[in-house]
Picture 1: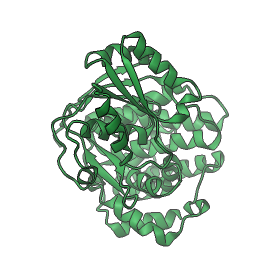
Picture 2: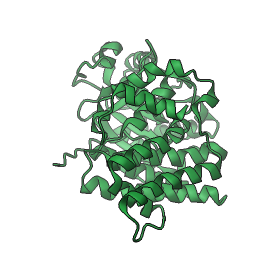
Picture 3: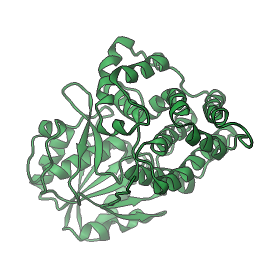
Picture 4: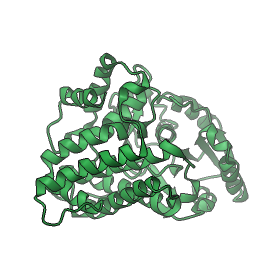
Length: 380
């Protein structure tokens, strides 16, 4: 397959690179809207970013009204604030939902495009204000892609939103901003990132370039799991951030799959963390991939340190599934969707919404809505 790679943003990577936000934003004007989440007040991250902008002679305006179960229409309120304040750029400062809302805000400020038209697939306009991504999690598979996932407020289904070319002016990947997690939640982030990386690695869009990026990411996620199992502190600044960065780059060349789509769809509709959903779904996704991409799963087993030397490809592929189940059991991470008060009957629309995300078409097996629902039933 031919490789088509176009990264819109300038990418700045490293510890304390957030200190360059003022210089980057100053190129676009003097008033900057920070779209963020209130949890970042706890470690004074928001105050730090405001100070960086003000030291550069910029005026920082903060929009922090993003609830835990935020939907895409929150961007309308942020857009009104940005328009009224005549902001020249928008910073997305936070996790996955915050980045999604910030991107939509940047897209609608000038055109005042109807949010529902955008969610229903309307082509975005070419008029927008620059969006600067400063993620606080390294697990955004769409950071460098020309599309992303948003939650529709009408029914809490997930929709794919396409970005206009050039929307993201810069991405500052600062490992020092990573959210500090502990216990099972920290462990599930490794399984979550692993799920995305493996799906992109096995995608029909995969190429030698995405393989090179994603093999490194997969190996790092396996090291994360082992570190958590040994009660060691993993290097979030170097390891976890690098794994997320490599995965995002790999997804920009390749594509995630149905497991990623289902995790986003579950998280959009129910108050269950996306990383928990990915972790629960992961072994069932791997079983499907072992059947459809055994040679890729065999390589993953080797990357995870499994004894694949001399073993048949099919046997090696199954080692990946067994290895993940073993790690899940040892770390006592979530294993069943029913543990979160979900009703199996209510999961049918979730499966349909996930299947309708365009990138699922690149899964290495033909995925129907029924197939997506079967995966949810197995994980239930």
